Length: 332
Image (cartoon, rainbow, N blue to C red; front, side, top):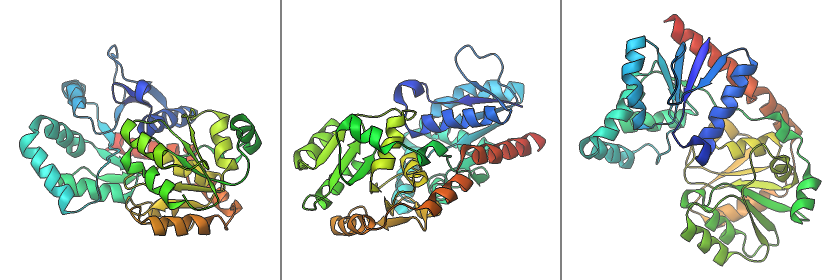
């Protein structure tokens, strides 16, 4: 079987969660014997099935080629939005009327695909709210590498000169990631906070730094494949990601694989993948966030949590599920 992956045109320059998802999925499929090719302008063979990553309307440029070659396609929508509800429905109703070209691109991807691979049932609910009737969905989560269960905490501490317990947050500095509220929640507590991530919204990043005490560290992004990132998870006492919007956070999965207590926002369906191992908080409530983090500091690491994520969220298990889905599409 040959699968062609199609990603955003600046995937290598952007390298967000969706791009890491595509790279790791490809590697896991290849290890399972599937031939995976990345589409580029010089591609001449689309293979047996095409897998689109992300909801980019310009993917419609491939429609005539798919039709002419009768190649089926599937989509990982990676649909970032507000929660399902009247506001989301209203926003996409307006786009249908006033942003027709983009909306028609989304509509083609989401209705003509043989299958949509959602990261959670919450994502599926948001897609149905925004677009109404969509292609059949299968819930296939991101995987997480087992190396995150064995990070070198001392190597991370030595490299950055960090000692003592600390709360870790990994993610770009943008409002939905909610770093500002985390800083304010822990401002008067005797605990360090370490942020790893780039300032994609400079004004927000500057605001966060202006409110931070001397117990807060701001580190540059660490490449996903760097041992220092696994070391950061191993070294932290709590992983806190009180985001207002996510789909399925790779950083949260990596921290979960490390066995760390998790504090996560309750507005993006995190309970589907982290129930039993995380405290879910209203990301707008600073008192609730403070209480949850301080309570999580008392819990300690969990070997049972590591075993659970090794069994259910390895990239091998994800590849196995995807291969079964691909084969079902090709048989239909």
